[in-house]
Amino acid sequence: MNNWLRFSTGFCAVTVWVVMLVLPVQAGDISKGQAAEFILATAKAARTVYVQDIISNAKKGGVKPNEDWAKADHSVMLPAQFVKAVGSKVKGFELGLVGTDPLYPTNSPKTDAEKKALKELASGKKDVVTFEDGGQTIGMSADFAIVDGCADCHNQHPKTTKKDWKKGDFMGAIVVRMK
Ligand code: HEC
Image (cartoon, rainbow, N blue to C red; front, top):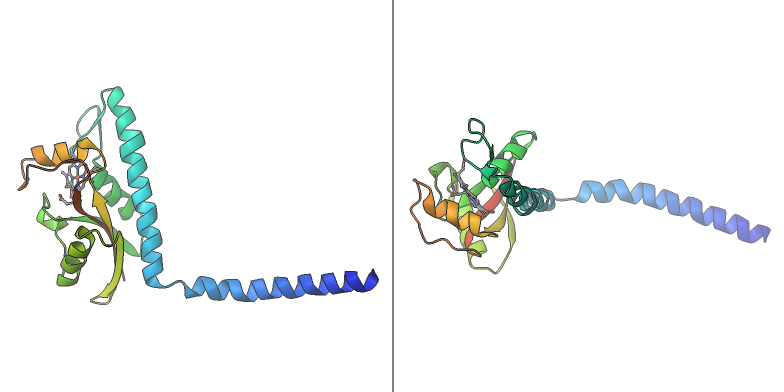
C-alpha cells in the first residue's frame, strides 16, 4: 500500500510537471491564423446574438436598427456598426466587414488577396479563410443574410447597387486584420 501511495504521488507530481511544461508551449504554439479564427468565431457569434435575439426582440417594442441610431429615437445600431463598435474597443487588431456589393467603398476588399479570399468564400467551399497579406494576418468568415431584415435594409438603402438581395444570400465577410 505504501509503495502504491509513493507510486501514485510520484505519478501525480510527474503529471503536474508535464502539464505545466506542455501547456504554456501549446498556448505559445497557437498560430496567428488560429487566433484570427477564434476572433472571427467570437465576433460572428456576438453579431448573430445581436441580430437574432436583441434586434428581433427590440422590434416588438418599436425599436429598430437605424444607421443614425445615435441621434434617432427608438433606434439601435446596425449589425455592421455593432461589429465595428466591438472592434473599436479592442487594441491589436481591426474588425470590420467587406461586401461583394458594398454600400460604402470603405467596405470593399482592401487588397487583391482579400478579393481572392472573398471569391473563395462566395464559392461556398469554405466558411473561413486565413492568410498572410502585406505583413498582416487576415481572417475572413463568410457572412450570409440570416434574416429577411438583412436583405430588406440593403435593398432599400439609398447607396445600394443591388436591389435583389434575399434571405440566405452570401453578402460578404466579417474580417479581422492583425499586425
Ligand atoms: C437597417 C439596415 C441594415 C440591416 C438590418 C443590415 N444591414 Fe448590413 N449594412 C447596412 C449599412 C448602412 C452598412 C454600412 C455600414 C457602415 O459601414 O458604416 C452595412 C454593411 C454591411 C456589410 C459590409 C458591406 C456593405 O454593404 O457596405 C455587410 C457584409 C452587411 N452589412 C451584411 C449584413 C447582414 C448579413 C445583415 C443581417 C444580419 C445586415 N447587413 C443587416 C445596413 C443594414
